[in-house]
Length: 76
Image (cartoon, rainbow, N blue to C red; front, side):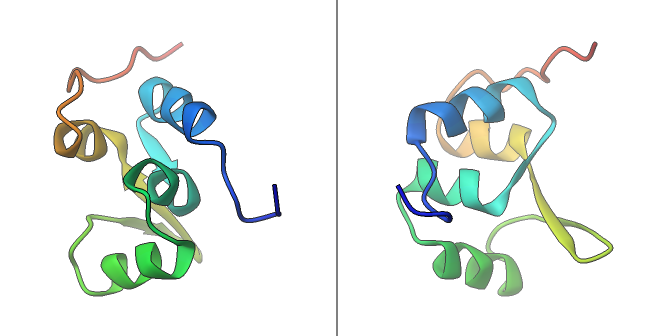
């Protein structure tokens, strides 16, 4: 696995347990490449939260798109 490849199962676990996810994890579960995912964010097709150069995707949106449990993850 290369630096930018993400294991889909691990990405789904992170999406299920966090309020936001990085673009690479979301790309992995949607089955698209990293550049396609960033293009979707730039085009406004995917919601994004930008903080000082970092891009995070709300996991509630991801879970809704995948028809998974859309409840907010528990916070510690």
